[in-house]
Image (cartoon, rainbow, N blue to C red):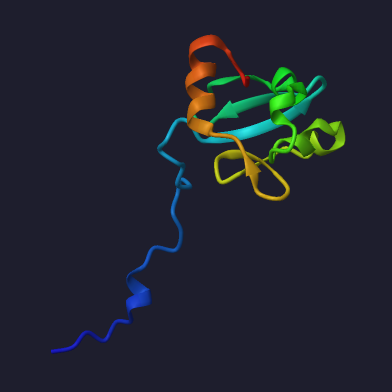
Length: 111
């Protein structure tokens, strides 16, 4: 005997509460600050600073994908996308390494 109920009738109307990522290192909020710094907060509430000035001013950054971030207006376009700090063009930072450093020292200095 076949069921007369449609498959859609068995589906919940919505998920409450909303599903949150399980990985604590997923970035939830990012704010660009002066001097090539970022303030970040992760989904578990861990928060701290990312210090990028020394890294961006280093000659070793010349010619890399990070060089455009030397422009403060470009750097200020930092956003959170899929749990990572990103910039237009697909450039991003490793959220897991960032999380580990911030959890330990309150900041992550890129060198």
